[in-house]
Image (cartoon, rainbow, N blue to C red):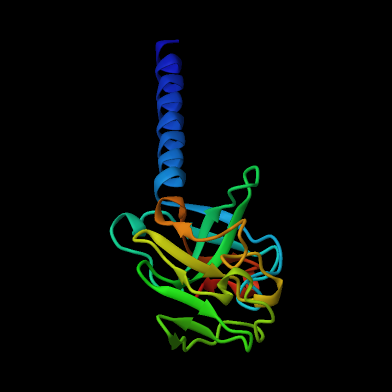
Length: 177
């Protein structure tokens, strides 16, 4: 009887440790998220599962063109996945020909799926504060992003992490960039 009790106690302790480590990993290191919508097509598709690195930005600043996850300020547990276009201290503007300007210079990038039809609030210069980022979906004409006043500039403290690995569908398993 004593041996059986000892075995049960070991099993309980083992399970508590496993659950605690899992909780710490999901809370501080990485988590899986599912893409909902078409705003990141053709890079990511609706229903793709990606892993989010929640640790890197504790040690370094986010970089231009990285894909990040952040909460939508007006949604209940709704998160957005977008690409960083503008960095802190920069000025972003989009003209009606669809060109993105960073500090007055045309941004050389090819992530956009098509020519931007409407720059919305970015038709005039948007200055990014010391902890603000300007983000856009790759499907530029079907994306609610920093051009929209309800999304606006994203503060670093609101960035949950960087999407780094697509885990599903298995046929597209690999890094996200």
